[in-house]
Length: 603
Image 1 (cartoon, rainbow, N blue to C red):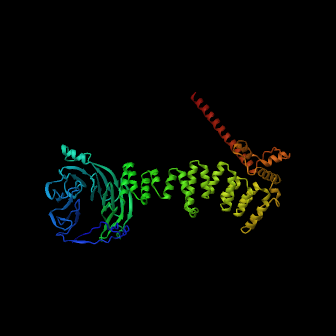
Image 2 (cartoon, rainbow, N blue to C red):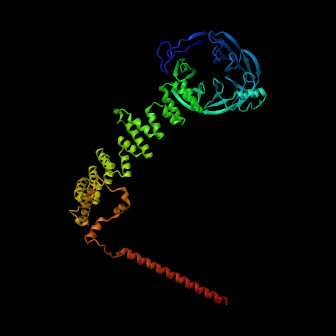
Image 3 (cartoon, rainbow, N blue to C red):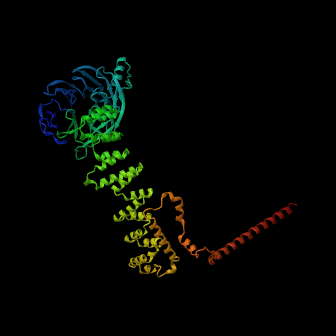
């Protein structure tokens, strides 16, 4: 039984009805055409849809598509329609015979230039599949051999214009261009090589690394379904996935492409249960992308107004994938995409303007903070320090501000960072910022607050010796819970003054440091004074005070007496050296004596 269905207008909601959402089953109403006289293994429409052919059991029948009236029949293993002639077709009568028909009448029969013809493909040229894993193309009108392509296709798809052909093989597909003018000129002049055909008729454009099960050309764009149930399209070799279709339990596709209706901007598919579905694919988008792939931006710009704004972001992502990021930035309407493109292109002012437009309720969002951080990094790269600072403040990037303020010598900014970091419990940043601004008291308090009491004790030993007793006492109280003996072993200036030499001078140095810091508060030392100020970093302040007070002159120190072990080692080394010297002397005397004896014997 053969049925027909008219799906035109069903998905787009003609007649005032709401359009059916993509992927939903269409309410098709099949109409019985009648019964076929053989079991069809293939059923194909001709180029204008007026006739259908069925082929199976070694026979073929051509019917009218509307009433299933018999038009022609015969013996055939395969059947192929012409891509342009209404009644033009070819049949594979046997593995060694191909017949051409024009307007349903036989015009020629020939044996293809292959050991065995295993298949037949139609379209703008007749394709004969050879047993040697190659396909041979013949001209419809003249029957001349045009070209042999060494691939083993399962199916061949010609574009409507006939200038491109896709050969779908088991694991990949090849897209070739076809030059009909070169072929026609060679046929007219008789310049056809019987083995290779006509050079320059086919050229490989690109390869698609996918297993194509069904497909349809739309201009220079190829829509197809692959073996794992994805509806894709290819423009110039760039693959875009439109939708993931339902698959069988084994993960293989159950859909085939029926066709594409340009007026409805929809591609229609049917599954193995004969359910028909449709998906919206804008023709204007496909044409725009095709123009971009050709590098024809004038045509692309003319097509852009015909594309709905809802599709602009999809178009922009395509432009970005082709490396046209500036064009993508101008087209996209998605603010996130526009921001990312602006950052990539170094247009930080555009990115900044986009962030300023973010609604108040979204300003504290994690995504917004991440964008400010990106802008801060980009501004720093572009040496726009003012914008870098503003972005770092907006994103609460204290580490970035610490780097920026330390590099630019911004004392006021560093003090703000220290305060904010302390309040935010960013102790590492707070400690460094306080240390750089000379706020050693705050550093000590941070170490105490974070229970880093050993570090706090050593820190104040260097910077705040007046607090040694206080912090060591805290350390002891903390340590006694672990080891009482270890806690008792800790020394303090008040209990063990002999272990803290020059502590009184260290206290004077601390007082000098604090007074100097107070005198230069809010000013710091200018960067221009670095060459002279850097020498102060190496000053031994305790030694200077001792010298000033007259008790710190350096004194000569005696050379340390060697220990008993060192003396014994030196004595042993001297003994071994003396023995070695005596051995060498004895060997030299023995050699001289033997030489004298040999000389006497010779006389």
